Image (cartoon, rainbow, N blue to C red):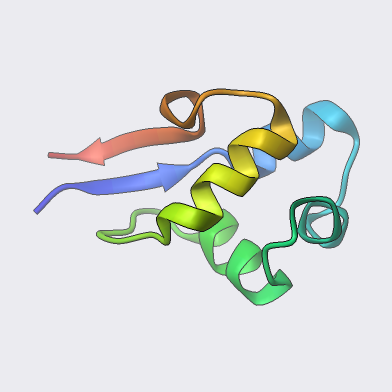
Length: 70
């Protein structure tokens, strides 16, 4: 099973936002943002959350996701 890492911290840093601000701007719960941002590799993620995060950072979902293991 493949693993992905979300580039939340990277994009938040580019905007000068904290993870809490990302949560507030995206509508994704802070606990979810924190889990996704700190994970070294996940097998699953909420697609709705990915859409919201991509929209918040003004990037494609493909830009938000980094494949760490196939």
